Image 1 (cartoon, rainbow, N blue to C red):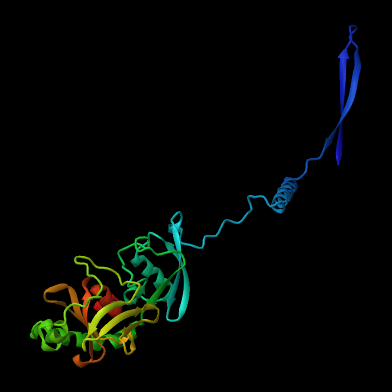
Image 2 (spheres, rainbow, N blue to C red):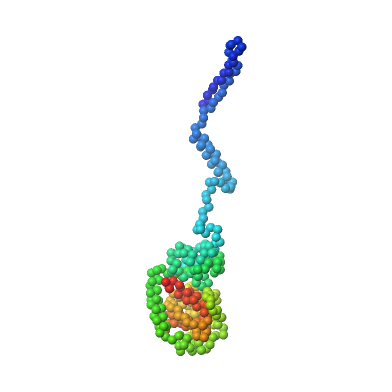
Length: 302
C-alpha cells in the first residue's frame, strides 16, 4: 500500500494577504518486514555460493579437509609400511624419524599385540632405540611381527625359564666348554679358511645372506639362514637343510673360543635336555647378540 502527503507552500504578500505559491504531493511506500529482507539476503547469498561451487571455486561453505593421520605427525616426513602378523597384513604410515619403540606402539594399536610381546623383524630384530631412518627403512618396506597372546606366552615361557636356569647352573659347575673333549676335537681343526671375518667391539644386525663357513659338532661345514618371514631357522649342511621354528628353540648357549675370543661356539637347544643341543663353531662375535635376540626374542627376558 502507498500513502500520499500533500505539501502546500504559502507566502505573505505586501498588502498582508496570503498567496499559495506551490503545492506538491509525495508518495510513501510501506516498509517491508525485517524478516523478509533477511530472507531475500540469504537467498542471494545461497545463490552466490551455489554459483561459486558449481564453477569449481572455493567457497566458505566447503567442508574442511579430513586428516587420516595423527595430527602430531603433520609436517613430518612419513614412510608407508606393510605390517605382517599372524598371516594378516596392515598398512601403516609413520614418521621416518620415529623410533622402533614408537613403531611397536603403532603395531599395538593395529593388532592388539602388546609391545613387550612383539618380535619385530626388518633385516634382523628391529632395535627399539634407533629411528626408522637410521636403520634405513624404505617406503613400502615389509615389517614382520611375531608374537603370541599373553596366555600362549605364559604356557610356553614357563618351561623355557626353568630350562634356562638349569642350563646356567650346569654351566657354572663345569669347566669352559671349549676345553671339553667333545668340543676340542672340532676346535682343534683350527679356524675354517672360508669363515666370515669377525669384528671386535661392535654388534651388528644379521646379514642378509646366510652365515656360512662354520663347523657343526661332527666337523662338517654348516650355514645358518634366518627366515624371518616364516619365523624359522634353517640349518644347512652338505647333506640336508633342517627347517626349525624359532619358537621351538628352548635356549641358546654361547661361549668365546679360547685364543680366538672374536669367535664363539654356539648351541641351539631344540629339546628339553642338553642332548638336543645343536652346536655351531666359529660364529663371528659381532652377530652373536643379533642371533640370540632373533631366535629367542627380547620379550623372553622380561
